[in-house]
Image 1 (cartoon, rainbow, N blue to C red):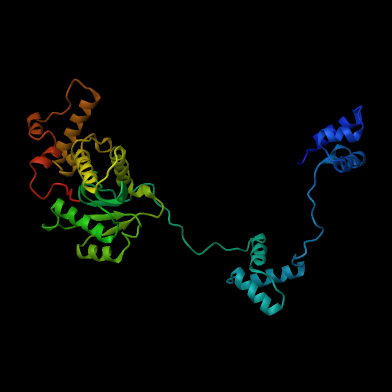
Image 2: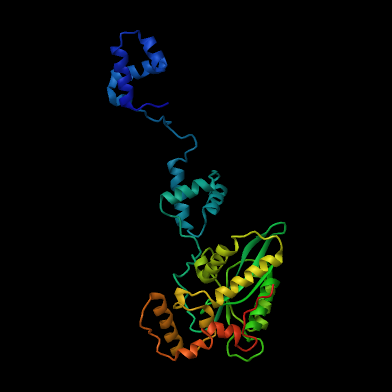
Length: 353
């Protein structure tokens, strides 16, 4: 145990003033006599300042490179700035017949500020997505999440979410998460949106992370055949796919309240929650309407009035601020319900497992 100088001085004073012999006093304090007398000699010679600990340091480092050799290494580095510390060490050892290690050269160059910046560019993710969507089916986000089935292990939920409306266009639950699962989910999404059998000027872009399923050649080939562009988020930046990450969190907050013992049980629960999420759950981020209200896109003016009507209901306003004919909405209560019950086939979300 190391004692500060002040405690050493107190111990010396205590021993000096004790009526017991020094040996017995030191035994009671647990201080070895050799240690005490070393302190005492230093104290008498230099006072309390001499009691401070000083790390022992050798007078000379045995393997320190001599100053003249250090100067030669610096001169060689200035003469050949394109060489790395490893190459400089090899060149110097070969030409001057004096061995120096790569680490020694690196430390020497760093001390003289001769280490250049690495030849790479750091990719920094933006604070928000640069090209924001303005309508449904412009950009689809997709990702996998894990759900456990007792006795079966992990099952993987692949989801396609419309970026503009937060609408779950398609989902697929299975025991694998490979490129074929991604393309199967996208096939369902194209069928559900009706985009697989109509001519459109631009297919939805696909936004994903850099998982192995999304960088596979099979997926790239499938996307080229479907004339779809693929955008991948910056590594280690899940905020790029914040909407689908939030969907996963919302789903798990409900789904994981129960245990599941068969895949079909889990599929039924996911299907029921997707139905609720798309058609009944109001989203503050899209103006307190449901994803289906936005995805099945009524005229923009009507949607703005409908949002105002929802906000008036939520805030408890006694004066309705929606001025359109209420019977027009009551015909379907919301465009989401209309999409669920009265929309043409092909535009309902895919819920097949």
